[in-house]
Figure 1 (cartoon, one colour):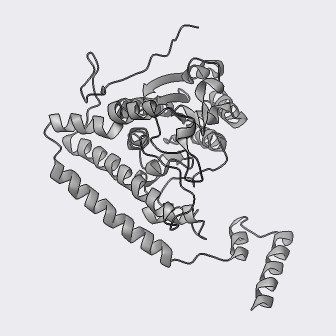
Figure 2 (figure 1 turned 90 degrees about the vertical axis):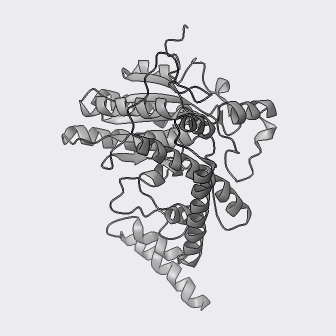
Figure 3 (figure 1 turned 60 degrees about the vertical axis):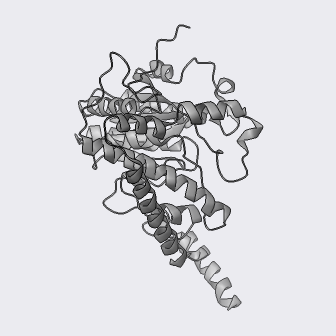
Length: 356
């Protein structure tokens, strides 16, 4: 099948605007803001990996290499829009307003780790692969029914496109003209399974054809392509033109998660080096800003110092916070606890009383 979904790229790997392309109209202040967030994520990722290895952090899925996807997409939304993330999308979640301490409580499984601030339109990260696509489809449908000027954006990996929830979510959203953006971060691997062993489709973007929605394929390491494409998809959704499937080609520089995955067992070393040296999204954007006179080593060093201080304060706050008791987990399942669950809670509390 001929590829009818060429990859959209605005900023090339050398940090230059591709001939014939027009970057989004962003002020110098906004450009520096975007870079600041991308670099902060790179620092956050490196230090979170160390915290995990020290036993101070629980489950963690590295996001290094996918900063342009997460920051570019989140920055293109309004504060009133909703994000439905997966477990790797803590960067977009923090940009949208989730505090660093909140992400660490979630990682450690502490009692209020799933609690999102009231003024942040964000669902907790989804662990069940692709289930967030259904949630986002439902939210986008609600926005259309209520004539609300919001959109729902959901992130998911290439492995999620092999799940039934992905197809159900897209089909429902397309039929109902939901105000939803489906953002696929195609990093080439579902843990250790390469893309070509998951689908016979030449691209993920072309799956949009079957559902009658718009599909776009972009360079996910190009902050401009991500920002511009999500902005356009959001405006189409607000105009009532239905959902969009975006396939962003990217790469995770680390393991799938810190739970024992070793990427050297299934990825050639030369591949990782190629992406790290020639396609790194942070380095690419840095080259662009430097050419515009908007970046300096001193500024970046200050950003790194600032982020390390934030993370140190956040992890110390989290370690001082209550871990929570088993019986407390039952408090947040239903608005009014049903009798059978209340009975289980009382039983757990009786065990605790006996132990004391």
